[in-house]
Amino acid sequence: MNSLIKSTPWDTSAFGMPTWELIEYSEAALQQAQQAKGHHTLKVDPLADKHLLHNYGFYYCDTLIEPHCTVSRLRTSLHPDISISKIVDFEQALAICKGAFIHGRFHRDFNLSKAAADFRYGNWLKQLLEAQQVYGLYWEGTLAGFIGHKGNNLVLHAVAEQYRGKGLSKYWWGAVCADLFGIGNNKVKSSISASNLAVLNLYASLGFSFSNPQDIYHRMTL
Image (cartoon, rainbow, N blue to C red; front, side, top):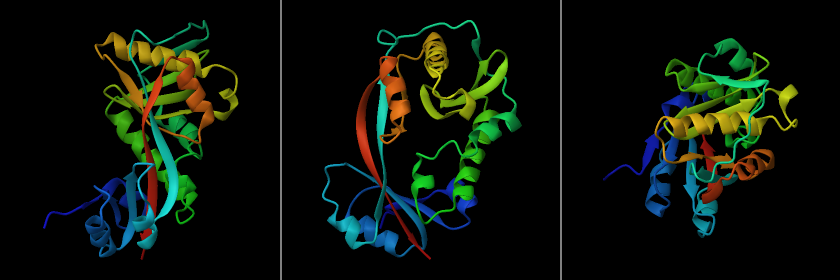
């Protein structure tokens, strides 16, 4: 029988327990997951019937949506004190990363340690930096945030607390998107929590549309 669950070793290393993701929403997959101790993740259509999830002990954590934009829709602005660079100091970026992802599903999961969730995102940031897939966001030459990407997908981003709420992010995000379009991508996309209204409004202001909502459910059995 084909496995309907897969291990997620990057999460295992952060949380110190076996971690799994179900590759489909079915009773067969839920039954397989029941035999595997640890932490489980399942992504489902928001309109799907959730009774099986509750029967098997899964609980709601988050709803993700996908912002996406083409070059013709992108709205950018320039600012004389703002710049981006692929040269990023890891320790400075890691300090910005810590505690920045309170909207993320791992921080919102009451069964998981916030410190371990921070550690997970720090590991991810390190991997992206080693692959040179991080844009540093600079204000007057000082690192103020970062945007990690895989190809045309913006996968991890944060701005230091002192630079939030000042209307600066639209300049950084616009510059990064313009750079990704400039190297031949025909679309830029991301994945964000529907609860993160500041980021949702940021993407909307830049001309992004939204699609592909997914409810995220977790379960932990030890």
